[in-house]
Image 1: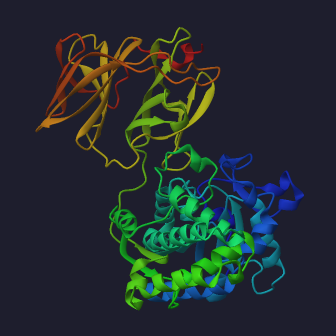
Image 2: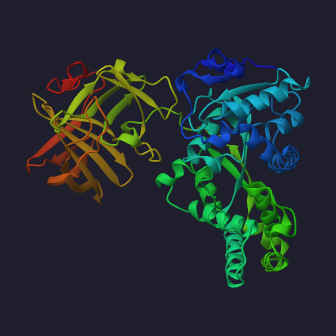
Image 3: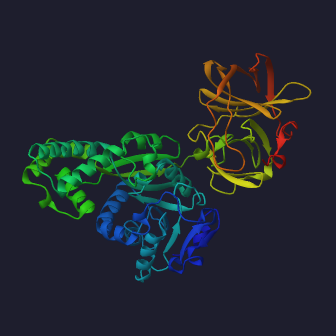
Amino acid sequence: MTFALHELFREPLRDLGEDDPGLAGIFTPVAERGPPKGVTAQFLEDAASYHARYANVGWFREVIERGLSDAGAARATRILDIGSGSGNSVIPLLDLYPEAFVVATDASAPLLAILRDFVASRPAYRGRCGFVRMDVTRDRFRPAAFDLAVGASILHHLREPQRALRACASALRPGAIALFLEPFETGHGVLRIAYRRIIAEAARRKLDGPGFDVLRRMVQDHEARLRDKRDPIFEVLDDKWFFTRAWFEAAAASGEWDDLRIRGTHQGARPMRDFAVTELRLTSAIGEESLPAWAWEILREHDEAFSSDGRNDLLFEGAVTLRRTARAVETAVPRTGWWWNPAESGRGCFVEFDGESARGVWCRYADDGEPRWSVVAAQEIDRSGAPDELTVGLAGAPRVLEPQHREAARDARSGWYVEQSPDRTISIVIECVGPRIAAALLDGAEWSFGVGARESGERFAGEWLRFSGGPRDTGPYRAPRAPRELGKLRLEWTGDGFEATLPDGRRAEYRRLGAAEAPPQNLRSTEKCAS
């Protein structure tokens, strides 16, 4: 059975062969023109070496078949594979589901080209696989387009793996299975303890060599993955995560998934020894002889410190299956609130959505560093991309934004409010994020930003702040200076509106700006904002 590849995506695809004949037949979403970001040389220029080192279709076939069987995966005709690389997981899927069409996705076009050529050489695979170079954390698939999703050793490479999970959830029909093969922290933590013991003993004996060098590098790699993922080091590290059961349990509690199952993929009685052998081979192409007998004895002692069940509980590598919930799930509609580019945090846009309509107000800075607000017209807010992505135009320069508080639940109180007075000269836009609020007071072109927390009931308390010195519409990015406090923020909800204490101490009542009402005219428009 074959499918038109473009029918499985929510936006047009273009053939990379238009720019490079060597990549003909590999497609990319039109929104992802240009070279991929954050992809290191081993996946691009060194793709052939990476393929030669890590190709292991037989092992992946065994683990994928066992994981899907345990989860009760049903017949699939449209399969999404994320992080396909050169085909470790795609080839088993083509074999296991002979009637299926597999969409192979990866950030590396050179790796996909290796897979494309292999598929073309096998008559049984021809016409059954599409190749798409893309960022798998962007939801560019048609909702409920796929019967099965597989990600084999991909999530731990991503800065925000939860976004890839959400993209898979959106792409799957209700009741469909997603399978992920990933490294876990517990087993590798014990392995790291064994490595440290070996390294210390080697130092005591004044020994060195390539085997010990590998163990030292692996200890550094393991410990780097435990850092806060906002650390800039992850811009250059390929391996970013060790996962925990709790991480996947939290993902499964999002309402998008049911029936979480995690099972170790290591079946041997000596997982620590087996992992050490694998890491020696993959890291430096050396074998067991690179470590002395006493080092292997230390690893044996750590293996035998656990029963067979205990070794499985340690979880070195795990097969994780999730079932797409069959319940009605909130559709992926952009949420009212603050949108931004995390790399340029001084710029921000508050956007309010009402069905298909939208309106926004943009935070910008004049040449003298003073903040200004600009109304963003509905036609300047483009929602045609992924649900967690907006393209907003300002002064002729479109900017791609994402939710600032991505994980927050929707709150109907988030929106645009105006003062209960005839001239309505002052607006407050508010995003409610659980027990906290983020508010902007718009008084003409001037503004103040307020942050507060629930004090009791429907009362919130915090501070009004003033930022300055942030990025202009043109020129290089500059971060805003630290804010200064302007006054106490007090806000209490009263039905459909609230009473607020302003920075000067004045108290005023605010009501929701109606869907058909235009924003106050004293705010500048986008057409007047060019610096």
